[in-house]
Image (cartoon, rainbow, N blue to C red; front, top):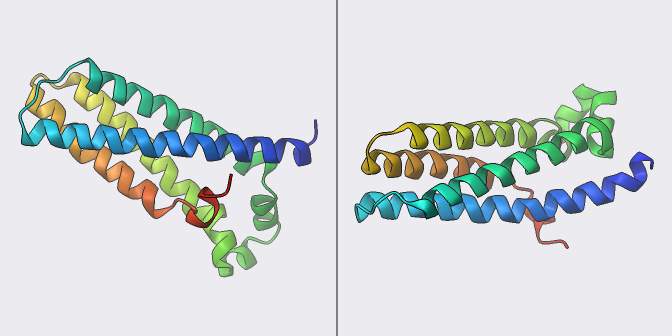
Length: 152
């Protein structure tokens, strides 16, 4: 298979995974905040949400890196003349802004999961989840290509 054949397949996978990342990030952050506000117990649902968020974020990152490094005509075009790409907001978005912010968000998701897992007290677990998953979700929301996400 050539890149022209694989590109639409990976774009679709990346598109569908994005909905999972958004859903699980929102649920994990909300679950963290409700745990903080209502002093709820940390339980299996919290662990499951953190795990699913991490899995979806990692798969999303993997497909994104494959698109970025090998399949995307946008990044291929950007790398041929990086100076010109930086002066074009649409190309700069995908060539620099989108990937950098999303990698940072995935790192934050991993940090949140690890810190929450290692915390001793339920209140601390929820506070860590609430704050870190909210930060990751906010970063993700700033760099989602909204004009493309609603296209099937």
